[in-house]
Length: 313
Ligand code: BDR
Ligand code: CA
Image (cartoon, rainbow, N blue to C red; front, side, top):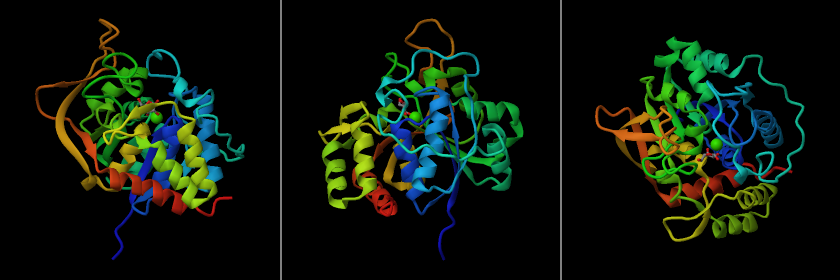
């Protein structure tokens, strides 16, 4: 008997690595991608919404796009992320979509889908946590209806905006705090794992060449247009596709290593270094923290994605 697909909503700020994460999720036969809820983050929400609509239209992804937040719970910290290009897609131009948003806003959409899926809904949150926090504040009875929130954000080690804070969390720390105090099962793909598991330029280049397909070229172009570059744990020059690690966990958690931690989000602005930090403290764990991933498994997800969208013209 075929396994039931996991009902998933992706909350996101596309974003190059967001776009790649969405593509991997849409290509997976383990995931039923119900909807996408864009949020202000890497670039202004005007662009993240436009990018989400254009992406689902261009790729023919059968998922709703429900309009999310244009601003943070309290206020936005700092600049947009220059690593994603001026409009968020690293310079890749997608055709303008004429798709409309779903009739519900993100927080009401998530609530309705959680009720419909009876405790099985998984949220993959790969942008600042504004929409998710707003959902929890507006619909507090949703908590037992969400199976888990798998997020890219935070770090148990260094940050990437300040010494300790990661981008998604520092854009809206009060939102991250609401999520971490919700009691919902949480899984965190933080910088402690994403920075060492970049996808190598050589791999993605050969994948594009071998496939000779439009989608292979698009992946290659996205990855080259994204300036978050690091040396991965295999010693290769790589593009850090942070958000895809959260999707990889949902597809097959047995291929990732984790630890259980108690994380507190720092929302006191004593100094720049701790605002938005995901600090590991002692006490009852409230989060599964991803610490590593099997790179062969991870690379296979990119091959599967190219295969899935191989008919794209
Ligand atoms: C996170 O911030 C964004 O720039 C990426 O899309 C990712 O979600 C990494 O810190
Ligand atoms: Ca993101």
